[in-house]
Image 1 (cartoon, rainbow, N blue to C red):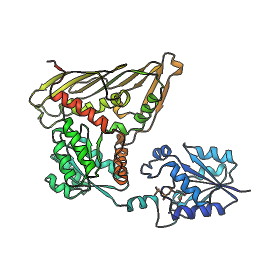
Image 2: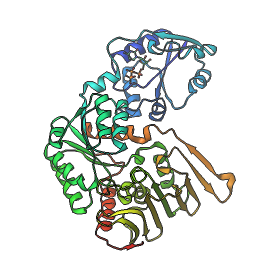
Image 3: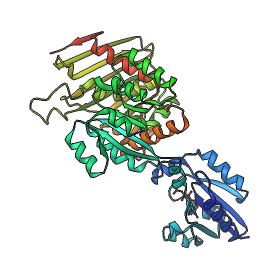
Image 4: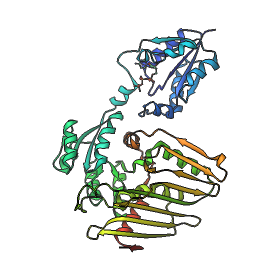
Length: 448
Ligand code: CTP
């Protein structure tokens, strides 16, 4: 009996896939099909897959061509599979010519002609490109422009920005530059809002009024009432309104959350998160504090994310200590917020113009998680125990600081009509409460 094996993602199964499977089967008597798992696809740069692994497996099964279906989960697995299943022929489409020649050592390698004119990528884009407009300033704008190239079905159609640097980048990339926000709204289906937090409410409201979906950099708003109103308005109009913190989309950060929630370090007793930077302040001798994000807005949402995701949003007490360097614009160079929960505590330290070790420590009754600085761009963390022999290190590739996954997630939310669950409404509201209390000086102590 001649055993044949082939691998693929098989997203939105199409005619090209079926022809490949039929010809693969015809090469022998028994066909094994390896369907790639989401994680493995991500590490090889395929981030836009629309169907879940189970849906893709079911689709391959439904063709009735495969005799056996397996999951491909790791680099190098092909060699293991060929040996384990006693495979005689390995085959894939001609788009891979040469890539798998190394398998000749273990079995025969056959490249089959790829069917012209059809691919999962094309089918994904056929559903129509989402035209994303960007309003705002800062390095996140150019990062989003760069990262959008990795996202199928999304194009940056226009920008509206005060920054000359951003306008230059847009010009180079042939992105339309709009001199006012109304014009921008005419040239897009969705908007990414990264303007100054004080402008967020107005920008989001106007976008929703014009039937545009919104992705907004956290904090979404500085007032809880505004936040509730915006969410309700978006729901009524069946539009997606999603707050974002890029760290929430980093694979390592997500795995870390799952490990903590599954009890790896026991019951969580304390969380300490620090995020600081010197940027902006160094650039100019007398900065315009009305234009730059203060510490609590720039770093607060990121630092608050693990606190609210792990301990929840129902804390008993919150105390804030802050050092304002510009009272008029409420510009804090450094702020520390302490939370007391029923059975745990948390503390965040944020700074712009103050530098500290930017790590994250989550302490539990069995052990603790340590994420080294800068933890918000995390690709690596450790779980440490009393007995160092039990310590474990985890590493996950971080592509584009999480931004490309954030954009994929936003597109998916628009296409399915279901809001994404990475940050979530409850956490958005809790972050907004911290902001509102800061600006209204509720439980805030000032230091000089
Ligand atoms: N394939 C093919 N003809 C096509 C598309 C795919 O023969 N028109 C083959 C590929 O060469 C591979 C298998 O089908 O052997 C699974 O490919 P996969 O990567 O899942 O499909 P694509 O349509 O190429 O997906 P994408 O556009 O996401 O790269």
